[in-house]
Amino acid sequence: MDNHRKMRIRRSIFLTLLFPLLFLLSHSTVCYGRVAKPATSLSRDQLLNSNGISRIRLFNPDRDALAPFSGTGIELMIGVPNEILPMLANGTVATSQQWLKSNIFTYVTPNQVRYINNKEKTTLDYALFRSSKIEVDQNLPYTNMFDATIDAFVYAMEREGFHGIPVVVTETGWPKGGADGASVDNALAYNGNVVMRALANIGTPKRPGVGIEVFLFDLFDENGKSGGEYERHFGIFEVNGIKAYDIRFN
Image 1 (tube, rainbow, N blue to C red):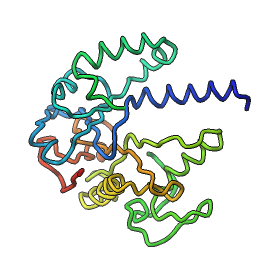
Image 2 (cartoon, rainbow, N blue to C red; image 1 turned 135 degrees about the vertical axis):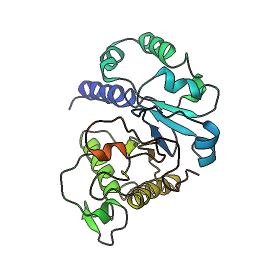
Image 3 (cartoon, rainbow, N blue to C red; image 1 turned 30 degrees about the vertical axis):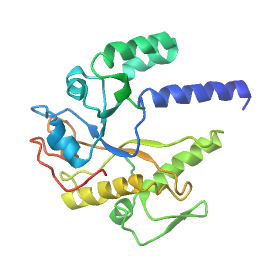
Image 4 (cartoon, rainbow, N blue to C red; image 1 turned 60 degrees about the horizontal axis):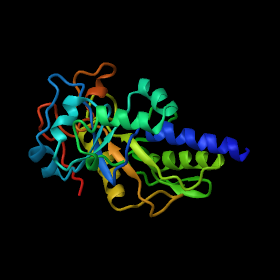
């Protein structure tokens, strides 16, 4: 691959990965979905600060979702709608800056913004970080699907010539009901292990000790979602704001 083409690919990766995930945060936090009836309102003191949550991911720059965070010090990761991506990718820096000003910085201050469906069979224990069996891949030992999935992506990037790129998991979680294997205990087991590993900078077999930034899905249940019943039960909190299970982020 010639250098010119590699530079174009590198630029493409930056635009398609950074903009939809727009802005990074540190360590582990949660996604804030709003497809619920009525839309769950945030009580900063009761739900966020009291549970050690200082960073939130929003899927879209929705005014009603952004406004409660104004002046709170809560750090945000904000998604960009897919239909906006071509304009940002093909536009100038000024185009992006104007979009940010109009859609985000009107509601929150700039210093607040920082930057899977697998049909392959696997065991529940392997997915929930409690497998005693070791899977060997590329001469590295794996005891859970989370690490294996991340390292598979890292290997794919390296094959294309992109080394040392930090990985951000922008959405991962476990439902509390609505499907086989979906339960409060399993949701706590999965999400609790994800948070613990992020806070401890455990990394993966390929990148031991290199912390992975993670956004848990979801902050609240979203009872307005269509699709399978499990889609409505990913929340750490119920629609009424009651905490579904005991998980902390510090």
